[in-house]
Image (tube, rainbow, N blue to C red; front, side, top):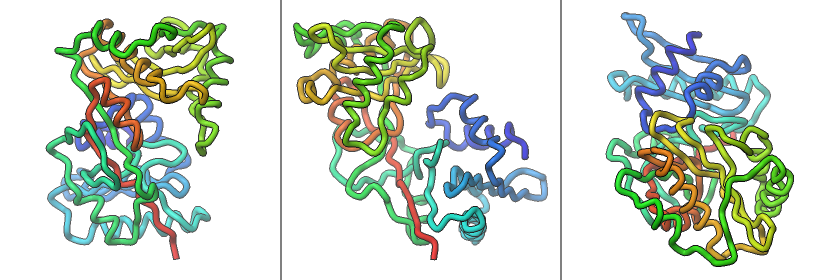
Length: 305
């Protein structure tokens, strides 16, 4: 299996996916994966699937070979392998890690705001899986990516709008690490998974490509955000894992963090900002800072019988 060949295939066909190149390569080349690859007469890959445990990380058929049953047979092989792995259900996209959160599409399962979808997207892939028994496992909740151009953004206005007099944003320092983790755990206490695992990297608490931004109120950390500079491409910045402590929600702190983080991306020379793999409700908060939904994801799941 040639990791670099599949990496090139992935990036060529999904140029809008913002993930660190080394992360993509590591996920593709994981030794626990099963790879199913078919080549054409010229030795070029015409279909490919990557399976990790019970997750189909990637399933692709070259455009010229679609609607010939190749995709259906490839999916059946994936499901057979997942049964051999000891599982009775299949997830598409996100498992223990992901190349794509789900299947890129223009479907949505509840109302949303601040939408500006990429023109190259359609529902063909999502429809393919739905016709073969897969359902959107998030119910009436959308999964999506959001982006914004920073070329004409005003960083001072973005950071200052909605600022509360008793809240200030600052870069976190090493002494903040445990307090940040406590804030993240408190913010996510009613969710299946806490964001605190993303905040445990000591390298995020000093100068670097990824840094923790905190909102401080009355001397206590009321919220936190991870701001990244060019980890996913030249000129590309990102914000994510927004957390606000339960006692401070609905006071604009999350929006203030996002605006301030986005302002810092602009100040540091980023031309575009993005956030990936987020969900319904947060389109309002991120949208208030100028972000727009660019891609929806079909979060497919199927019970094998």
